[in-house]
Image (tube, rainbow, N blue to C red; front, side, top):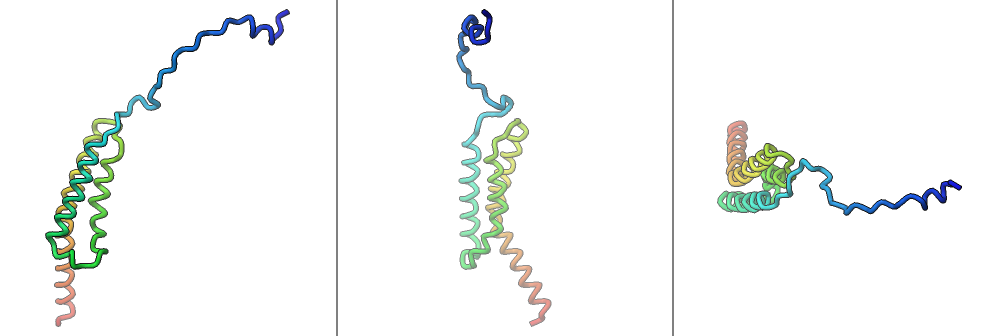
Length: 125
């Protein structure tokens, strides 16, 4: 009597192996929070110092739009690097973002000054 229902009882059950939690992507590096957090804080401080030292605080808030570029570069640092080269690229992007944030207000002032000068020369007042 070798029916399928009785064949299951005759087989010995194998002991279950202890489950080990295997990382789904073994090539990935561990998450890093210190470097992006430092670059974010540094970018915000640099943006605040650059904005406060310029004549832009008396201007409308839409003059803050150029700060999206440095903040975007700093946001790239939050992506998890999968290789050491990507880690280096994230650090470089964060440091460029912090540096741009420091000089962004001066660059906007300079562009507005040259734009005003060009308009004054064109209209010949």
